[in-house]
Length: 346
View (cartoon, rainbow, N blue to C red):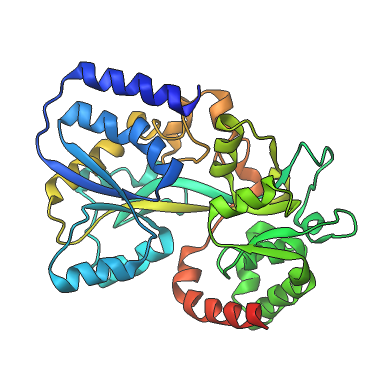
């Protein structure tokens, strides 16, 4: 069902429920179609059940914003979706609260990397190899193919940052997903990743927003790109695109985490939202509509086979992938991003 029809259907259902607002909570996500679908699948049902009005905001995931709010004593966010490495840092700094006891008790039901003392996965996503199947009937099957400009002539789209890009360079150099971080934890491994990037650099169109990456692919400016799988599924299902995902090439899946901001103005409502979301039947509202998975393994039994197959953490896909190492990036992101910017400008 297209998103526009779902919006209409659920809006009518919400109007019919007649729930009266009992308090408010500000929940902050990643904007665009992510927020649209989260509203349909999760926050509207939360309001219908609890009567708590939700303001669904968006941000860029920057901890600097949370720090500034706390330092000024004027916190306006209650619950945010934050990338796992930033959750690690923010939790240590006291920017986020520990999970409510009822949520913390569910830790054993979660996939590796999707549960933290300060947060639970709002979604699991993957950076995958994407191509236009309407133009490439026999598309790339590996990251080595992505690097092979003789076999597949044309520009490549690549995310313009070290995090999520160095991993793909090592995959292209033959390192299995499960061994990539062992390699990256050595100076020689980092040099190896940058050397591999040297090979493809003249053929790269860098992107920083997913919208730009999709536009470049659609316009034919690039023949393939790295990209977040959920955005590609959304384009295929709602905008009539025919983009292929080379799952078998290997991928890393990452996790965005719901976290309660320290000194949140509506902390009780924020905790109530986390407790609501921790129930598998409520988590399922998002992956039913979008190509991103969830942390709770029990959710997959609540999805159709078609819904499961588009998710990077589903049983049919996860064998091709490995989790991003949040601890590695929490320790090394600043230095590696600086090196990447210097390399990119040369």
